[in-house]
Amino acid sequence: MFKSFLAGLLIVLSLVTTSCAAGVTGLQSYVNTSKGYEFLYPNGWIPVNLGTSARKTVDVVFRDLVERTENLSVIINDVPEDKTLEDLGSPSEVGYRLLKAMNNTPDSEQKAEFIRAESRQGKDKTYYLLEYEENLPDREARHNVASVAVSRGKIFTFNLSTPQRRWDTVKDSFEVAAKSFTVR
Image 1 (cartoon, rainbow, N blue to C red):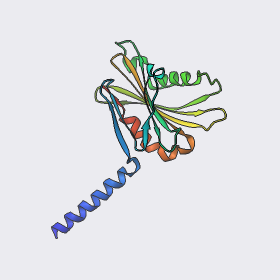
Image 2 (cartoon, rainbow, N blue to C red):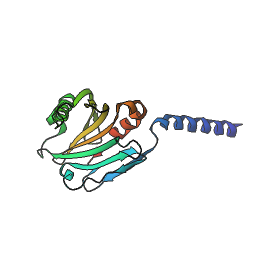
Image 3 (cartoon, rainbow, N blue to C red):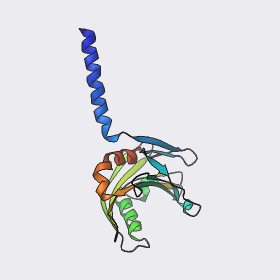
Image 4 (cartoon, rainbow, N blue to C red):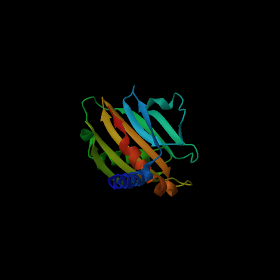
């Protein structure tokens, strides 16, 4: 009797565990040991060859094999060595600065709307999670989620982007991926 109860309990626990993870399955790990960051990204995504000119600030880009405009990137820029993310501003302030940079692109009709900003504490770093919606002239609206951190005199921006029509389908895995971004 006890064995069948235990077996039934194990089956229920495995079903509950599986169903809780069902919304975010299909992520794999990327680790860049030389630059000191890592993240999860969706299965079926492939690296994009950037060439040498984009390598100044854009460190890596992945895109979906099927939905070719769905992508992620890691951008690394310098900040003063003694600065922390909090020194650069609150999540909203940093988010609005990035929004301003997005709106000041060569495509001057691009409009991005800032949706939310939050702070999360990692092991020994603060991360800002930012969400935007972009409206591009003559193109489909897009949804972006970014995670930002400062480490070793660098600001790291991890950004995931998808067409707005796909947002409801991918938002759970994008949230997990954005929150998985860590720097050392």
